[in-house]
Length: 153
Image 1 (tube, rainbow, N blue to C red):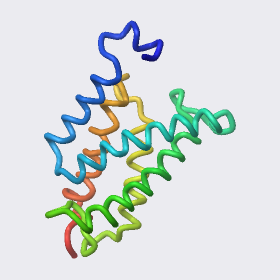
Image 2: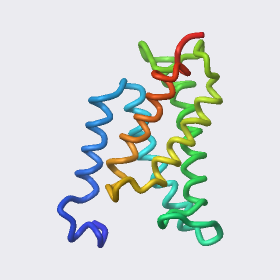
Image 3: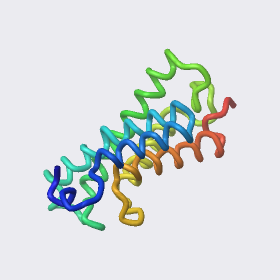
């Protein structure tokens, strides 16, 4: 456990489970899965990049631009791989398909931006293990489903 978690009522695992459950219950399976991947890949990447190069970049709310850029790059790669390979080969009714209005590159760019934003924002002081999967699922769902970017053209 981290030092700040010792005195807390719940540790990061409880928030992680809550964030994953909320995403899986409220959103389409592909968007929920992608938001959980953002949590498991982009959050640690942001931490590593922030520790390595954060002193050279501006900071906001104790988050560095280096960490956010790291999260964005990994988020783009994850989104591209997820929709370009995993979903394209083994999934029924995804929120995005190769015939969609938005090309895969644009969806990947948006996904990376969403991942970096969800990781960088401090939402009411809540644990990011809760906010990253929920916020990224909300934003991806709004773009792909409500915004129509995932609809077949």
